[in-house]
Length: 150
Image (cartoon, rainbow, N blue to C red; front, side, top):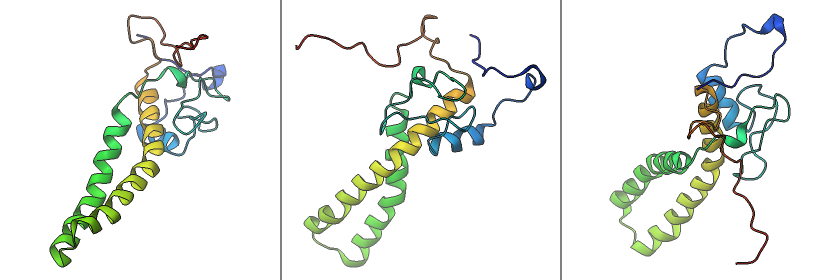
């Protein structure tokens, strides 16, 4: 497996790769993990085919189930202790828990998912994945469209 590297002038060819934390933070801020200038997303969660600045093949990086897993993990660790504290302190009825905590968890997950997916894409880019890990053929950035109604 060869690692994808951006095209660099000969004078900077030996420049070190982006650090792990830099790639994560750039991805979380919707910036290309390689150059820090282009955008990772072309929609709310759809990864751009490639960076518009350095042409990193971001669309072939498959984050799959990692971002939702990390999102649920983080949201649960942030919100579950207050749920237990409220229950222990006031013991409100279950309907009140549902009215308060279900929207809180939903909003937390919606707000966390995009930066976490961007950070995951940054992590994958930092590790050198380029979409050719599966049988040597690059993965399509998105599934082929069907022109007929099914």
